[in-house]
Image (tube, rainbow, N blue to C red; front, side):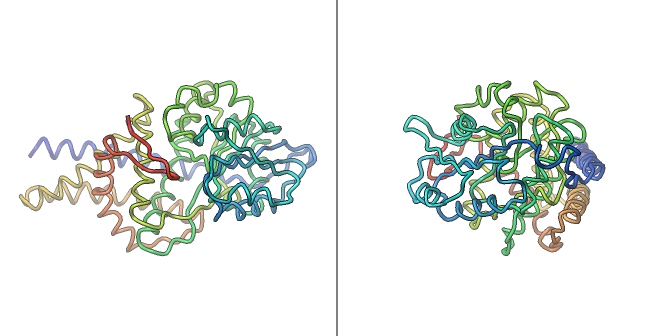
Amino acid sequence: MTVFYLLTFLVCGAYAALMLSYLIGWNKTIDSGIRIPDSGIQNLTIVSIIVPARNEEENILKILDCLYKQTYPIDKFEIIVVDDHSSDRTAEFVYSLDIPNLKLVQLSESQAGKKQAITEGIKTATGNLIITTDADCEMGEDWLLSIVSFYEEKKPKMIIAPVLLKGEKTIQEIFQSQEMTVLTASACAALHYNLPILCSGANLAYEKEAFHSVNGFEGSEQIATGDDVFLMLKTHKKFPNEIKYLKSKDAIIFTCPAKTYSNALSQRKRWVSKSFSYGFSYITCIAVLVFFTNFLILLSGILSIINIKFVLALVTSFSAKYLVDFMLLNSASTFFKKRIHSFIFILASIAYPVYVSVIGLITPFANYSWKGREQVNR
């Protein structure tokens, strides 16, 4: 029992310290508003926005409309939709639009997957700055201007920007939204310490030259997921201190939560599956710490039912995790003007140890489906 208590307090204490460091990093990261450089808007960077799409007929027109309405000069950017063997009317819808800066690229029979789609899009790109997003996303009209003005000011090799959920209504959708908000804040905070841990290809910018300099996705082609994080890690290795986080409400990309529990579970399995491909790194250590923190809380709960002497371990570990998680969620939600559903956060905090433990234990042995393709963990 003494060993269990000691292990639980050490692991949960380390987790609390990590989250407190993220809270500090998040709060110290400056809000980056739109700043037009002295050279003027006509001399801004030429941008290529790449939108990989597979069976996105329900979403493709919406995101193209958002991109067309950007306040950034239309002659300074192009939109490249890469059709990844869609079996619906995605390509037909793109063809039907009369947008001067819109291109459609269709993958050949020997090409498939998001990494290949982005690579082919970059081959077509004429811009110096590549920005990737997803077909099921939306953004405000100043989104592109905020990214480019930040790039012009900082000149980083890569820019990570926020991705949040919108339109959440049910308990499980709100749970996803709170989780995404915390992950977004954590990604920002980690970069404050120059230790990038997360990014999303739904809102990612990088220099085309930097992409080629790190040989793109070479080395991870056989891994179905992780186009964003693998590229981030390669960029960080070659260009230390050259990845920046754009903390700005103008730069937010919005997407919708998974509508069913099964879709949400499949999505999380896909996210977690990437962790087993990073090798031994600080990201792996953080993933292991998060897993064991939640697993030990769950185990404390089970043992407390059997023996009341374990209740102190449960109460202490759960309370510490709840407190630091809420502090980070509250700070990020306030910045992004997201409503905090306190009751749902309490429910989520109780369910999270079970959720993380189950996902962590089954993912190495389970396959998952994405866009109609069955992915196999190796």
